[in-house]
Length: 421
Image 1 (cartoon, rainbow, N blue to C red):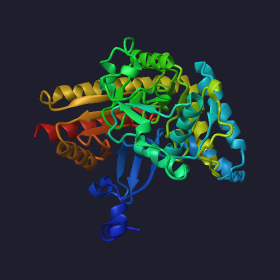
Image 2 (image 1 turned 180 degrees about the vertical axis):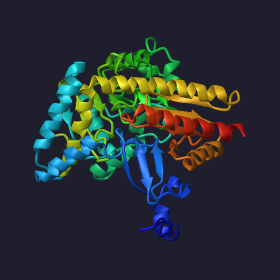
Image 3 (image 1 turned 135 degrees about the vertical axis):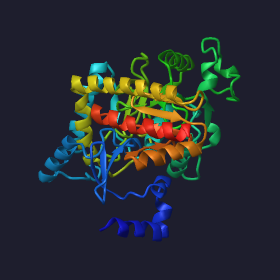
Image 4 (image 1 turned 90 degrees about the vertical axis):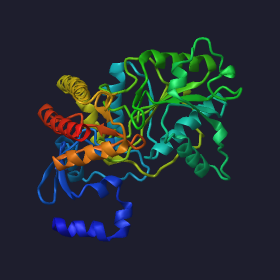
């Protein structure tokens, strides 16, 4: 099918157009295939991808080792869906996660694989926290405007006849308020940063790194103080790794280096590295009370995601992979610092850490112009969901250093041309 025919379909079919993202409307290319961090449209034009499937493709497109593992699995007549039965691929995945990720970090967790949606993973984690503590209230820590509370409420109401969940079961505690507060002096019953009432929470739910909005990264000291507060109140500490896990911050876990030991960890949704849905919840053995607890039961056994996840997890055994990752992070630090220094004072600022970065402009119009200019020169970037004036830079962990340098040169030129004009 020719480019013109494909473009006609997108522009004439209202249903397809309505289903398309804003980025699809802005960019004319019809992508046909891709490998690693390079995509090609139907006319053969090459693009460098700085979006990685909005974070779901942490190792880029069609990582050869993952393709080979899937091919081998299919040739052996491996099943895509185990229909609720425990599979051999699940056993291998659990063993790989334990031996390569958990044991070397001296982390002791049981592995729970819920229905493969974030809402269900959150539901199971919070249901367990409520069972263990006998409390209902959840303190959701963070600045994210999208907030997970409506998501959790939707799942609760779907699971329980009559919709027993209440918005009062949740309270949001912004990072900025907590960071300015003296944790050691505060009595939770007299919290003056928010009307939280007299009931201590069942759990604190926090992102160690929050990428979708302000790109807030909790410091090790701050996380330790939050953990101490949770312990003092008899509440659980739940860390959501969706934004910063799977190496996005430079380490496998975003909370590494802080010294905290969360009671529950929700692993990154990009765990499969191939865009295949999978959710994993890590649970401290001391609070494993899932027996007879109503969970988000699923008949789906995500075997294909287990296969690709194993490949991604094994990369963390490779010292050269980790060394190269640190080198690329240092390069991004230097590149963004240089971009900001070249622009007029106050015109832009750098955000983020690790392999998830952003260039904050003064308004959304400038960000969109940078995206368009980069696209015209063969680089795909996007804005954040809420912070539309921030251009997101999220290269694959495995992007070759030479390709990263080429992409940042294109990005630098686009930013300079747009903001300086």
